[in-house]
Length: 273
Image 1 (cartoon, one colour):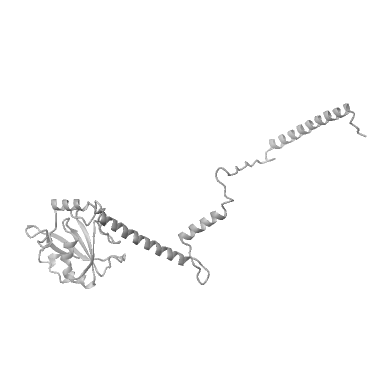
Image 2: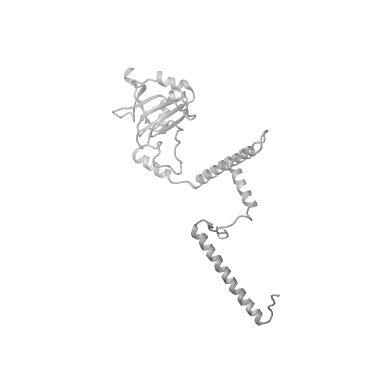
């Protein structure tokens, strides 16, 4: 029994088909991390490593469901403490999808329905037998047949695509309506007179403010240019220039008055007394 244990991992011998000569080692142990993730509860999740490229989720489920009902299986390229990765879209699959056969060695998180199933995997599972993944009843398609199936799956049926789009838009409209109702309820005043500021309330407030202050707003073309502030009587030369300009203005006005008086004398309209 000690030969089937390595650093806390149990070792399961698995081979592709009955005629295969060499077996592959699959390591598994209970999933235990400090970060709690609802999709991978630590008491019901089994962590598997060194999963071969040809092993799919159906074969993995068939091997471990003898220990209890399986709720979900997540495949990953690297160990992760976050939410489990879902398979890519059926109509638009990703090139690097951990659920595709032949994409390299992977890791798996097997979520059981009950915590006792994880304990059964660690205590009651017979590890002395070599498990066969691809059987006559449940074959794993590889090679040319796999490529043909992947190519045919890229041909999208128009009716199925329209149904998928309609279903997505229905769920999106329902989610949008739910969020709108929640925001409206949050914007209502509570018993103490407080209201919660939401994104929509900010937008509504901004629009109302623009409507009220629309007449006072100016565009770029209508903006008044700021006058340059000039400091008067700040420097000595400014005071001197101001005095000179004032004297010149007085002299100019004096000469104008002399001409005016001379013109009035000539017209005999000047009567100083």
